[in-house]
Amino acid sequence: MLMLLGTLLPTITFADVPEVATPADAPPSDAVMIFDGTTTEQLVKTDGSPCDWKIEDAALVVPGTQNANRGVWSTYHFRDAQIHLEFLQPKVDKAHGNSGLYLHGICELQIYGAKEKVEEDDLIMGAIYRINPPLVNAGRPAGEWQTYDLLFTAPRRDEEGKVVKPGKVTALLNGVLVQHETEFDEPLSQYAPMTFRVSPYTKKVNEHIRKSEAGPLYLQDHDSKVRFRNVWVRPLDDKAGWFTP
Image (tube, rainbow, N blue to C red; front, side, top):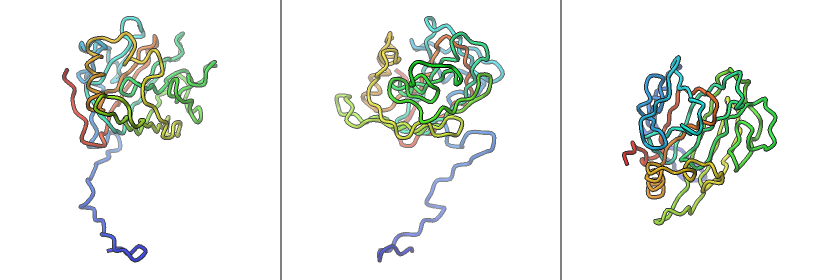
């Protein structure tokens, strides 16, 4: 037992804490793989049809045709979670390496050419688009693999699905803190997949988020052939699961 200001505290043993294996070249043992380099089975297009994006060298290749594709949803939904993904922007690209990681289809972690001149600071890589610029620009040049590591807390909602407590995002880009407990509630971007050109499938996703507070990842196609690999989620509560509309 430990003594703190005259109060006895229970001694914590290793048996009281769940054990998570952390292999050097693999995700944590309790992570759920969204894309492992071999299959797109955990992803669907905006209309709910199977993801048909190509896999090359264990990387998921964005088609780079925004009007036709727009993006893909994960079929794994989560509320609070730790999220990891790696991405690579093409060296030569008229679309500036533009893509993004949407959380629940509401807020977007920006992927944009780190060395590009931008007119708005929420276009800088590491920004949450239309919500908050990054603390620093920690992006690497196009052609190099980069990482996002996030701690995500979903907004809390009432019985009608309205936000009663904002969500929060803490994000590291290439190991550097770029967002610290940044708050959000509903989409501020007119192009957020939850509100832009909504399909019947997306409507069902939206309904599920408002009822359960759990939702998916969304990888954006913004006319750039960005590549993704090692996309995984560690749920931090018991609200996560596979979504079947």
